[in-house]
Amino acid sequence: MKNFLDQKVWNANDSSVWREIVSRFGQSDYDDLTKRATRESTLKSEWDAKVYSRKRIAEYPTTGEQMDMLYKDNLNSTTTHKDAVEAVKTKWPKDNSGPVE
Image 1 (cartoon, rainbow, N blue to C red):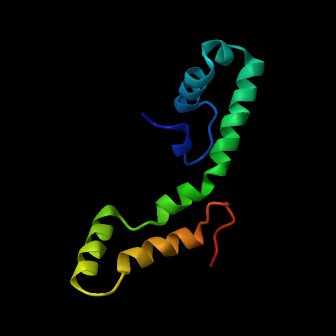
Image 2: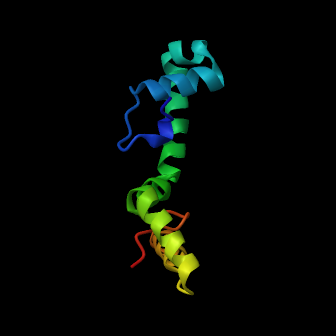
């Protein structure tokens, strides 16, 4: 099931937003247009706060590439995997101030 935080572009009409409102607040809050707008605003704020996470996901090496880096790290003293992950984390800090070049 898709989480509303996984949306690449905010869409209040996405079924994940409906599911989140109903599961957290109940169907009556979704049916009441005023309450729904308030709940959607809350979810949008949460979604905005996770921009860094979506940016990081897009830039991390693929799982296969990361596994290859880990394997190579065990063969010699280089830290290619750690360096690759840290580079992405540095570029997209949790405070959403990225990209930091």
